[in-house]
Every structure is written in structure tokens, then in C-alpha cells.
Length: 206
Image (cartoon, rainbow, N blue to C red; front, side, top):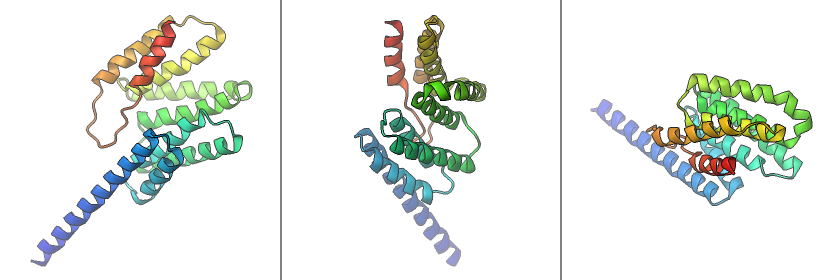
């Protein structure tokens, strides 16, 4: 009887914990969608600290700070965002095997550094970003975020050097098809990118 009671209490505890996780993640996502970056970041950070076996809170903590850093003008704020993103990435890697989503995040962090100082960091980090995307593509060739972000990165370089955009535009178009096919039942698994790919394709063809 005691064993049954203990098992029941454990199952209830796990259910409550699972619900708290879901509620907190949804709250963070909502704040992010509403443009409350600092609030979303703080919630993801708290969830990541509690959930020692889940990599997604760390992933989103890294992603929310990385995407914000692309438009941050204040260097001190930008450095803080990058520092938080890099720490979140390392924390996520301790909780799961290396995967394509985390590689995309890593590539985006380096891309922020390039856009921050193209003359200094372009030559320094561009080979690294290309290497990361090649690794991600080999690891998960049907991941739409890998294909799109890789093409998006190449597009920036091609426009800068005046290269032919046609093959890159085709890659962006191919990524949209992958977005339509991509499925993962894990709660809060990344599903972003299609809207950005559609917009990128429009500008790519203009």
C-alpha cells in the first residue's frame, strides 16, 4: 500500500511540474511575441535553471537574446545579450547531444558578431559559420531552419560581393518546402522560420 501511495505522489508531482513547465514556457513565448524581450529572457532563464534535463529553455534563452542582438545599437547591451546567449548554448549542450537546432543558434551568434563589426569579424568568423552550417546540414539535411539560415547567410555575402543570387534563392525556396514537411511532436520544439523564408524569397527575387 505504501508503495502505491508513493508512486501516486510521484506521478502527481511530475504532473504538477510538467504543468508548471508548460505554463512558464507559454508565458515566455507570449512575452517574446509581444516584444517583451527582457521579460521573456528572464522567464526562459528561470525555467532553464529549474529544468536540468530539458535543453529547450536554454535554447530559447539563447535565441531570444541572439535575435534581439541583431537590432541592438548599444554595445554594452549587445555584449550582455551575446554573453547570455553563449552561456545558454553551452548549458543546452550539457543537457542534450549536439543537434541541428543548437548548431543554427551557434551560427546565428557568430553572425551577430560579424554584423557588429564586418571589417574585423567577417574574415575571422565567416569560415566558422560556414563550417557550422555544413555540419548541421550533414547532421539533419531536412531541417528547414538549417537550409534557410545557411542560405540567408550566403545571401548576405553574395549581395555584398555582387554575386549571382539565383542558386541561393533556389535554396531559400527549397527551405520553404521543408518547413511545410517538418514535424516534431516535442512540446515547444522550434518551428520558427517559414515567415522569414517567405519574406527573404520575395526580396531575393526583386
